[in-house]
Length: 429
Image (cartoon, rainbow, N blue to C red; front, side, top):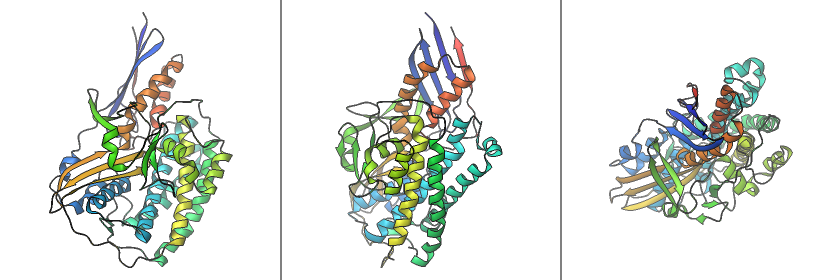
């Protein structure tokens, strides 16, 4: 009996410290374990006892790359609990803010984290020596996204302008005008990004994913909709815990999420795109067609192309929102706290992000539940590795290590540990 263990002690570009173990016996991959050993952060515990109004600002600190997603899921949940319906210009402003986050987060991943995998560079700095104009285009896109977040959210990182019921301050049409001019150039850059990523040397792969995303009948999903799947799931956000469950696994401090009926599932750009293709703007759909994509995409290595489609859509949508913007009469809707429970779900750049809160009569948080997309995708990452590594076992060790890293980076799990490098230990027994 032959046995091989592929052991990766530190994964690059994963939130917290991560590692990978793959066990191969008799030429077959028997097990693939993604070990996330990020330190506990206790945000759900930190929220207990705090006033409901603090949740958007506290949860925004969970992530420096997608703070808007945490802010929006928490504020949606609080408004659900208190019976507040934010609509009209205030809702449009929140969607504009979300566009900014998608643009800056996706651009960062496409150009700085993912593209080096396809071009054979250790990182974006090395890549910039040979592709300076390409890297500059990525940075310009990120700058456009940051500009939206700074104006609408109050600052680029960890925005502070969102509050339960609306915003602390809303911008004027005159203030939004310069954003529109910058976004026209960003839209051109985004279209060029789609064409560029479509030309990369992308490995062939086709996985039978159970795709899960929000769906809204009138718009590509960002901060509203029902939860649907490629295998017939169609539920309200309030019913999330009836269909999804989290569990501890010994190898990870992060919870693993599963569908009660179907085990692992995939959230993120591939799921959003495949379940909501018709909601993309005409320009984005045409760009996808020109890039060789159909209405669905099951090749995880093409996620870089799908992300570029979403950047193009976000630029297009932001311009539409700015053009249609009417200054609201007041920045927020007045409300009173009450004993209640609320649910919120939005589409972070990396996928579905669920929040639930239970409040007492004074509006103090009694219980908080936060399920981030990376936890939901961990079982799917392991399934990808288990299915794909078997076809790469003849590759040299360093190439095999890079392919494993790339497979995980297809998910864009996070950036905070991007400075770490993968150490690969291949043991033959």
